[in-house]
Image (cartoon, rainbow, N blue to C red; front, top):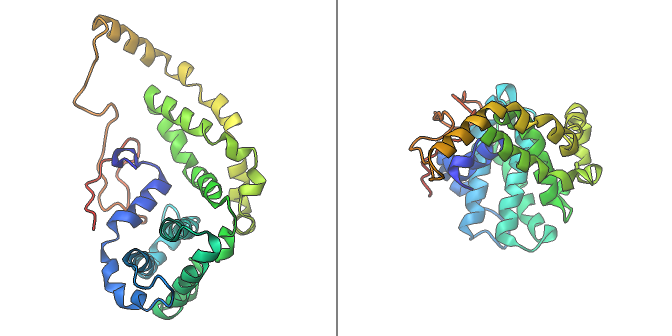
Length: 268
């Protein structure tokens, strides 16, 4: 994923877990105790460390007042399962022992008044016991991001067309919506399920009206292009007003999410 394209809530959340969870290494000892065939694999251990660190340091704040307080545990669980799937690559039954070991480790490393709730933040592995779990994740991410998508699409013709295409690409998911939406998530948050169902691309695309909404901007662009006699125009600045995030993370106030962001990523 290109860092400059990371501007949606789920993207920011996953990007944080991938690159900015810097204190995770202090949990190496707990995670090295994994009782699975993969307990010597540093990627498996590192994923465990990030999980423990997130729940020990960020769970309470995000649960109480974060922008994703109703969704961060579902996103976290999707991210964990996805990391294991990338590494183990043998399907649900091969991933199950390691995922279960993560849950076991959480049961004895988490403490404090919110320990039991934090432990449940890593969802039951049964929600991933489907071959189409990636489609389920894509659908859920889209619904979590929807409000931000609409705001960004309203900022410029370029953004509008970008997200018009993005939304259109979600159409196949809505052809089997009720088969993809996880029943457990529907039961816990029926209001969000109803909203998500209403984000059907067939409805949303007709409401964007990019060409109508930005007709003046387009006409100016066409006029400017003709003045350049067909030459390619390049600006050293991003076409959107770009802001920088300070401490990109859930629970920390985002200074701006109206345009593309640029991260300097220090990979470990």
